[in-house]
Amino acid sequence: MFLGLAPELITGYYFNFRGENSLIASAVKRNSEIEDDDRVKIGQKTDLIGALYVNQLEIMLIEFASPGEQLYGAKARTDKLKLMQGMKDALNRLLMTSLRGSNSQELQNVFVIGVQVVGMYLCVA
Image (cartoon, rainbow, N blue to C red; front, side, top):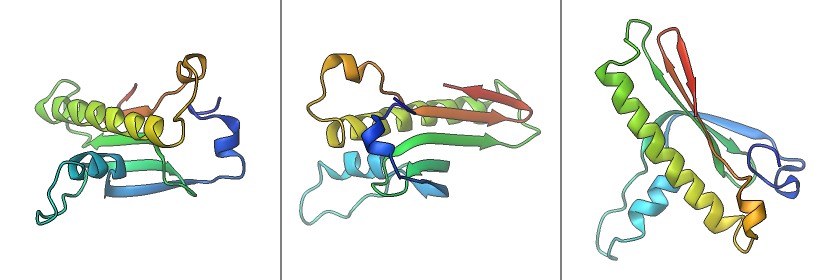
């Protein structure tokens, strides 16, 4: 499995990186509970999103902080929480769409990549 996806899901696919855009997985989650007359909510904003080009499955989320930011500063902490929530939403969408019906052995190899850049530090989850 490459990037947490079965080979048949990524064969011939290209990655699409979108900058400062909303997560589709987060928007689906937020809009699943609205009434017909309510306004549609956008997804969580993320600095850079890596998605498979054909089916737009979000598998890599990246958050950046300025070079002057401290590793354990307020911006870094809020970005880390935002990254964790976005990764959870992306993983849920991945499991509910493309990997529905997979057995437990296959699901143990599935993951979403989260990258946080704080100044000169790179943190990968």
